[in-house]
Image (cartoon, rainbow, N blue to C red; front, side, top):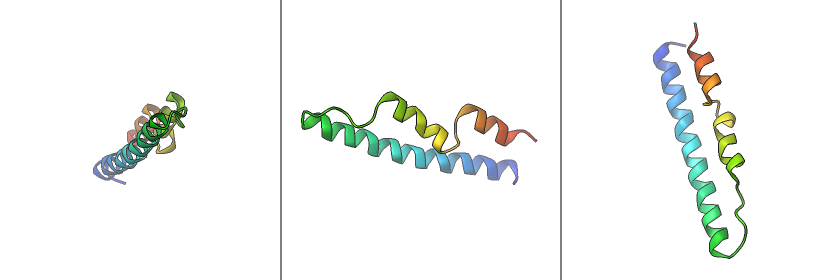
Length: 65
């Protein structure tokens, strides 16, 4: 995979992560509006970057030749 392809992959994964985070935020807002506790915690949000392989170590290792 070329450097450009790796960069495109990271960007695509970031977009997917952003979509998941937006859905998680929406669910939390719905639950707060109902007077319920949020479904997702800070740990849930930080886990998204690991799930999509866009955490610091994963990206750095992807670009090491």
